View 1 (cartoon, rainbow, N blue to C red):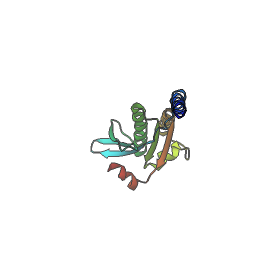
View 2 (view 1 turned 90 degrees about the vertical axis):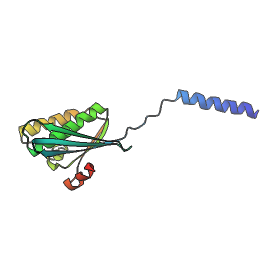
View 3 (view 1 turned 45 degrees about the vertical axis):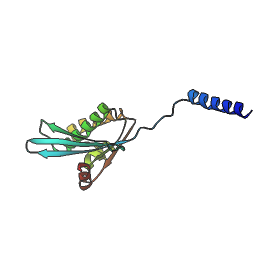
View 4 (view 1 turned 180 degrees about the vertical axis):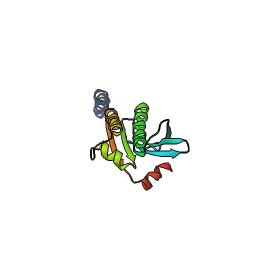
Length: 148
């Protein structure tokens, strides 16, 4: 009698595993730090991606056109979002030291410059491609920690 009961329990346990839908695993948030960088021959943007598992990836994008600091910050942000999409990252915690760019994207300040408004609209289009997107301002001295 005890053996028959155990066989029945084992059958139910195995059958239940097959019949239950797979457990949905919440994707982790990757972190990306973005910043513009001045170089001897122009302006570039720097990006550092990091995952909870310790994976780190660094990217540098050289801008082949004259750019203000704020436009270069937007270029860094947009390129970071595009790279994340290409990598298949669906949840992203974006951190940058440009208070103006973060405030504009978070709708805490408005865009009065036509070029900045174009960049802003591009960010809005890209953010729809993520399941989760956070944008945070970090002071410049803290952003240097991403370089380490």
